[in-house]
Image 1 (cartoon, rainbow, N blue to C red):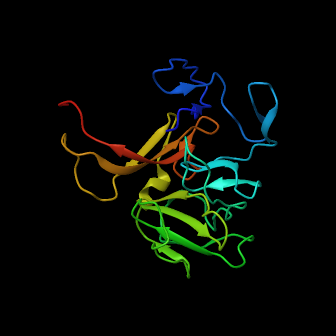
Image 2: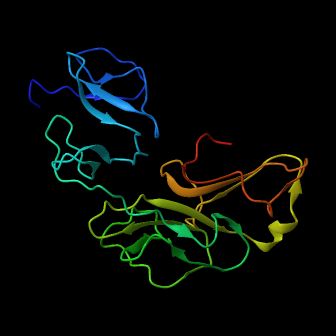
Image 3: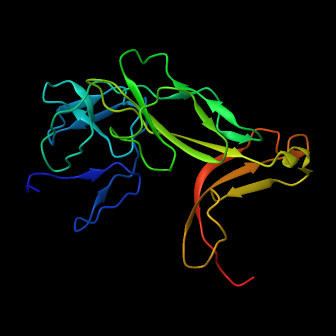
Length: 231
């Protein structure tokens, strides 16, 4: 990088060692105002309000002097071409959760008029070559659905992740006064100590002192698990 460039991460980690990465003692948050100034305190850039940020996506001043997003961050170099708009998020017809029968999930967004939705069912991040969504998805086994929208002239939408767990119908009658957890390894077989296995986890908390799998899960996330110990 050029000697006149200085990369500082707004992470709240407060790291000042000039021989390593520099981090501020504050973290930027959406809807706040971010002001960048020159050494003479003259304002160089003002972001007000600061928009929501996306993983591996940067935000700054476009060559047109408008503010926008960059899908190829260039810390230490001049900003390249970017986007002033982001394609909208995907909205599923059913929330992520535990179900006991085959379900049909539709994907859409009222803001999409000329764009498209691409998705994956294997946990990978969807890209421009992923399957194009055209008809509702039939889900009859535990599935990790990832999807995003693509609209011409806009930054690809945020990757949305939904876990649909298909459980044994007998679980409907299970209750407890303690929290309950389900780990599903997508039918990959028994665990061993050598391999890490993709999974999903659902956590159910008591409601009125009773935990039931028919309630909405408190937490529903993808996970990676592996076996440890000998017991």
